[in-house]
Length: 62
Image (cartoon, one colour):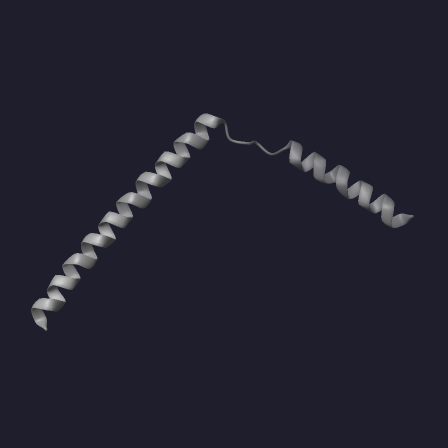
């Protein structure tokens, strides 16, 4: 019986903690998505450029 009471108490505490969570608004999610997409694209382009330059340098040396 103690296990059932402990489980019920655990669920109640979990519900209290979940009520404290602040979920992002749709606008915040959209802004974060755009920011991440732009940063990933910029880093990808930069690394591609570095790879291209290093490839050209290596071909010139060899």
